[in-house]
Image (cartoon, rainbow, N blue to C red):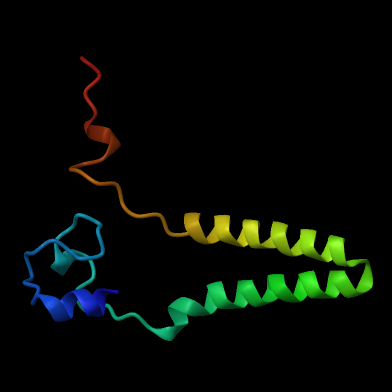
Length: 101
């Protein structure tokens, strides 16, 4: 994703990072590269869920195997969506909230 964005516009060190974090490019993704290892965990967990569903389907029954696969896919999806949340947008974070004091 970042390679496609970088190809369309040259990024300066002080430009906003194209990853959407709101940080400057030099403080966020400058120098980082996306590798295949970034995809290893999602692919591995997906294959594990499929294998568990198929094994359960053969051993116990088709409907149970579908259920195990669906629940496993849901758990993996939730895990992957919360494992690396984006940084908060805006300046400072929660410590800068004014409660009228």
